[in-house]
Length: 407
Image 1: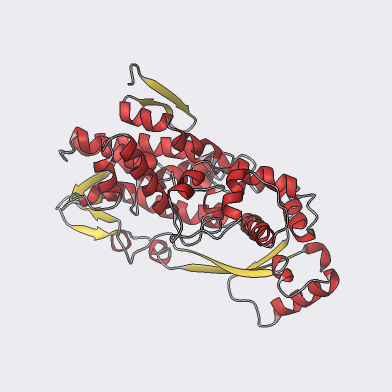
Image 2: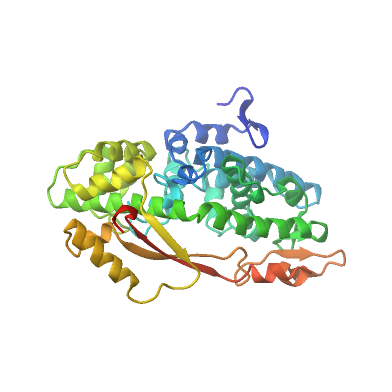
């Protein structure tokens, strides 16, 4: 039982107070404490040295913003009961509990075909059993089953508390000022109309800045070419370690990580025991293994791990249109010949891919601007900036990675 006010000192928002016993009970739980050991931005710190913050930082910030949003909506006569307010804060607090080591970087590598949202829901259900149903409403809102649709939008929408926090937080820790947004202004301008989250017209320029900031952060930070190649190497490391382990080669690592390398895990066999193992898996398991594997007898695994530990990453070429046919094959042949590799092995050295981003998705749930006369318009139609419409289009970039010293 929470007997006194608990305070976290956050560099973004200042003091974050925890007054709710259930919120505090969740934060204290080992499942939640694991987020202290899961990086928020994968290997982005290899590009931006300050980007060492964790999912723990992020979800506390999201919960703080949810509290501000609830207060704002209540002041505008939107009825939110104490039970609903608690459920909203619990749902946003736990929305990222399903992230594994290095967050998005290994999301579909350690476990195939399972999103972090799916695993977050599993954590909620486990804690709900442990806490005797106290999370029932939070789970209903998180799943989008609750009859008040705007509540789910606060957790998972175009202008949700998750996006508001990660843009401001990641901008701060990376030092990329272009990603900074006026969170306070955006939340103050929120309202609800016909059970849908809307933004009052006075906040239209803040919304425009928010969409622009998403574009800057994705192409300058999240999809920075060095970050892309670093995380591709990380995926290759896990794939190679699993291949060796399944072939009977000794690959030392923690007992927890070995569970995910010694077999292929997907939704069909992600049972209670795997869930318990996942609750113990974090960045530390993976990085300590990578350091050890730098001296592994397998030259491919050793090469990949050394690339990350010493930041001697492969070269990455990136362009706005697909590479000309044959370029990848030409590079593969040269690398394969120089290193005497099989067709399967060269795939660990030379590979290509595509990344895409849409700063604003106008095809799904839209950001609605509310006018004084009660009418609404999607931000694209409400804005007098032509760039907002352009930012609703998908932008793709293509890349090729290969060892820079060999070519």
